[in-house]
Length: 420
Image (cartoon, rainbow, N blue to C red; front, side, top):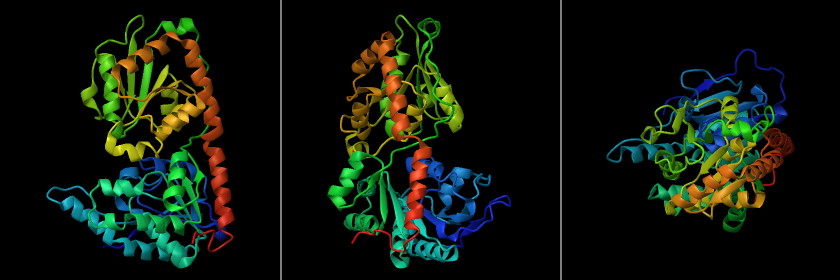
């Protein structure tokens, strides 16, 4: 492998030294990458002093996140080369294997940076493979590791047909979890699974976003009836496409537009889901966070689909869609279409912020939407509950304060509360 590339903070970064709180983040995906864990970490670490945070990460996610523009934040990036896993005739698998073989190099690189920056805490997300390097460095140095668990890593690995590693996946995962001084789980079912399967205690920390400018004032009934009823969806997850198609087909065949016209507004990257184009489906460009919230707040109903594919049950039952926080931040009623076993369905039922369809049933979806169009009181109830749940569990400022406190607490010890 070639030498890693180091990208230092700009000249306007703060220069005061607080080495006791120096943090090393070892990850497959840099904060801000389009996935739940990196997005949450980007928001959590947004106010962390640039001179105290060093990120050791692969070149693929860095390029996809920032392109040719330099990062806007002031963190220090140490970027090492990784291989694209695409390719025919087994080339993709070969490249993936080379990334696994690079783990000792990543361990050495992270160890060097930990010593160079006198890191007191290591952060990582249990995704890909480089979080294992973070666990090894934590073991070797005694620097406490904080680990975020957003996915069922073992089953994801087996789903990719990793022939050799499938025999060691559980042991590797157990090693990483037991190396951590503190674990954050994305949902209550995930925390339960970590406890029962790996004897690992964790703190639940769900997706979060800034409170912003507050919640939009509700329209009067007269104002609502002068325009189409707007259903909105925002996202890029390929696992939700087939469920989204069920709604798109209802819009296209006109079965929802009875006394009032119904439109589906899609906020997705350019060129994505082009085959869904039809009368009543409006495509919008992908927007930055603040603008996206403003756009979604103009909708009457936010559609939150999840996959019904049986081989992804381990994903839906424990993971938690990141866009839930963005939706709740809009203070609008949510229409959730997901398997009954999904963690987000359990959460929505407990907190009453969504109308739920737990089968891939087109008729049930149509009837639920038509009922919500007529029942403004129920929509208002769902909206009130969405606001309350957001402020209680998804405000990034509260989560950030808690995480920074945890970092400061663990920085006082070399070994943390590592599990035996």
